[in-house]
Image (cartoon, rainbow, N blue to C red; front, side, top):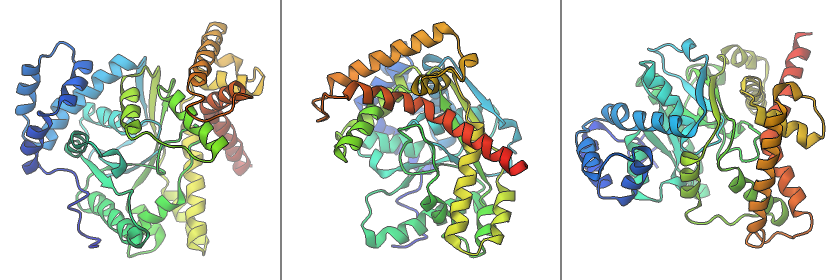
Length: 397
């Protein structure tokens, strides 16, 4: 494997746009998605609109940007951004993000960047999500690059080196920002933790010290929080199956279903926060001799930043109090919200009960476990925030 050959993982270039558009226009799925976003548009309208697209920038500015903005208006109670004004327009960043929704985590960031006149990011996407040709075309048109998941052990290191080289080239040479999840897969249980392996991958392309190599990537941790998770029942089913059976058999179309549910489901309020730079922390790594220890300490720091800056919603506070049987955060919600949330939890447990046999889970203790898993999903951010704030106070004193 040539670790400097990016042809199979890069996004589309402008000269590939028209051919990709032609392929997409032949797919019925395109019209199903557009019917949800723009129900008043006819097939002829969509054909005319798409056929005018000639460049990637035009595709984002005229198609995906407005589409995701419309999705936000239809399926959220409000979309807010924190610290976005700290970003410099002529600077490329590596946005290292927590991961909750397959599509929207990165898409909503790019919506904000477009609105503010910033260049959009390239987006890392796993090859396991690209089994449908239209999805592969759409994401590569939308500046997604591919992270190969199905790799034999022999090719794992060169594939990681190639990915690292591509990220470094994109940021340092092309001056284009990148969004990448801080670990493989979504945080289905609500516990956002950075994978040390990802940080190690980022250092594979640097010829200098780890500290200098990481600083040149201009890493900014980013955290996205949804008041409600449309995929919470699906995630809970997987968690319960893993807990009881030690495995979970994913349906071939399950990722596509998660994309659809995440896209169309109501998410309540949504916030994206860009955390402060981690340059000073990277400088501190010089005092540590062992490379693995450097990476571990940086991962812990990134987690603390994400946990401190996670926007907590009433759903998080209510879940924490219900899970622990207390009223520690009762000032963060009102009685009506609490009643509505408890009712939602009850309905979610009943929906899981319907698929219990399919999941091969025992009846005894099922509802109790389902309730705990669902509550923990929303409560983890509060627990992590408490611990991060306590550690910050300890370091000060």
